[in-house]
Image (cartoon, rainbow, N blue to C red; front, side):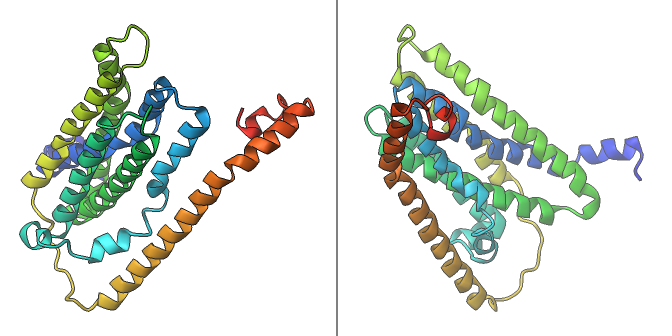
Length: 275
């Protein structure tokens, strides 16, 4: 047990502020894939079925454990030598998030829904990768006694990032909207561009912090890393088949829906058939 004074002293540790900033960086992208993106797509006139389909962009969050061992073991070309294992992958993930956000900003979903979906998948994958690296960094940067406070700081920063990406981005889009209640692509483009710039908080933090002082084992894990890469490729293949089957079964869903509607059962089964 620690006294309140001891807890307050630990909260002034620089690593607490670091985890708050990294938590903010981790919490920012998630709502830009889910609720905020859904509002944008809805205003762009996309069908609800297409908006639901884009939720597959967040598939990476549920399966990030698949490539976590790869990120843990495999060095990033050039950057690992310059910055260390954790900071190099953290920077790669953050730059990828910014690139995905800018790609989404420069894509009008009303005319290029497939391109928007591609950048959304890139955003989900990059954001999930950032989560993996931050978790590893938090565990390695401090001893057990400080882990509770670091976890709390990370969660607090994560929630602030979600607020900025949710309510903050919608407020920005509303302020920039000049359509008078219609669809204004420029407002959303600038909103996502601003969110990409906000990600510089995480990038700056990555450059300012130090690499955890952890002695890693020598290159005796080449075979294990290869196994992880193969496993990850199998996962990508299975996920692709699963998503493809979902897309190509859309026609069957429409036919089943018509059968229910013709039989007068449309309302009871409305939630099931996607009405």
